[in-house]
Length: 193
Image (spheres, rainbow, N blue to C red):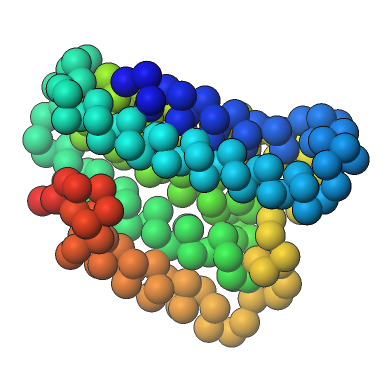
């Protein structure tokens, strides 16, 4: 459990830095733009690796159960995951979905975390998914304060094409299908069904 907590502190902690523009700016001045991005990437990767390993280890060791969700909530989780993949794709493509949601990545993270909290009641899952949910809520509040383009990558800016939403939905559904079919068990080690 300690590795999971350490990973979450590193990963979510470095992702809190952009919420404080003055602090980010001072780091960028000290390290340079590339130095800041390199440090951000390195800490993110280390945190993500520790989080994944720590979560797997905690589940293997038998994480204490805080609540026992009914089995049918797994179906709700699967249903809620459909828009998660669509919103993730929308975060990287100019489309009307992105314009409507403003920050589809944060919406996707909140929905992903919430849906997994519905289906998993062990302590490790609550720490993992609850941590990401809380971070995404605070980041969304922070993004509103920082301005309309905060948190948007350059690839996602611009005017949507005529069929961009169709492509976003089709790619999102394809990714969802791949995760249900094979990727969830390959990457996470847990079958979806």
